Length: 174
Length: 202
Image 1 (cartoon, rainbow over the protein chains, first blue to last red):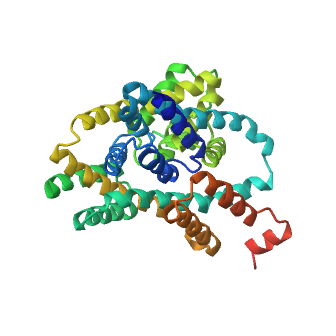
Image 2: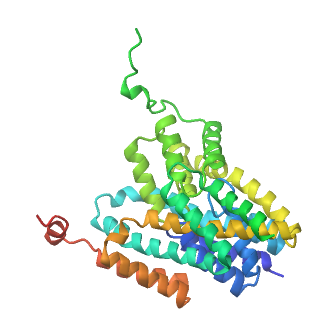
Image 3: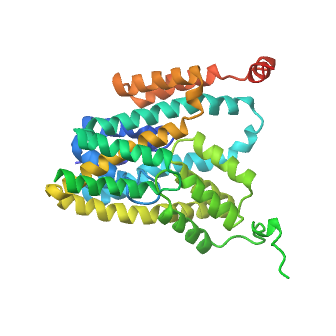
């Protein structure tokens, strides 16, 4: 009955945990959405994450589609508010307080220490998606091609490459 | 006899009066509609510092520092912090709605279409390709962001411990943040002379 409340709760928790941005919270998102709550299958999660990569703006707007799968448009709204409002309120408050800590040497320690943790969490995010998305030679080839494109070709819109992956999939895998 | 424009003419002067809510909304709406794939910081800097002159470089970097250190996405945190600095809480709300609205509308359209076509083999094939491409993109962005960290053995150790805990031992993120986080910050705790000597061993 209270699926709506669960959606709000899960995404509010993820919002507060999303230190380092969307990719860092991806493994936890997958764990809660697929394994704990069974709102989506592995494949659905991969598909919806992929959809999120072809739209502009903040890349975790895909949480709305997850909410939509649970309780429709109201669920989408709750996922949106849950995922963005708690972190936003913290940012607003911290931005007003931040200047009080100007010159504290711990500020630099915090950034220096959290940087590798965030990189580790992003790598874990890539692994979480790869476990469902990489299956067979064609998907490996697409992933490597996009990796090389993003990594070595500057000034290329990554969304174009992701859409390109979709076109190759459509032609080769249907 | 046209003289080249003086350098400071390319950066508009800071706004004299308060920036209008409509302008805040429109600016962030454009950023939300045109930024893709993690490159949002470049779009924000271009719009807020170079085009609008709402922030100077230093204030932009300080806002970015806050946005990155705290929970939440850089893009939405930046919108909220900058909106708040321009016009208070209402400015923050308007900037936030602006930067998320285009993507939110589009993802919902795609999400609804996906929900009713989930068993279409063409849709499935395309999304398998998109998912594989997303893995490649995520891996590349991780390496780009972590470029500096991969040069330090301590950082590599923190990265490996984090990946091991999350990906292989499936430890909940909250525990990873509460254990690895403080440990990493302690490793890099402020030191007085030692830090200066270590950073510059000449």
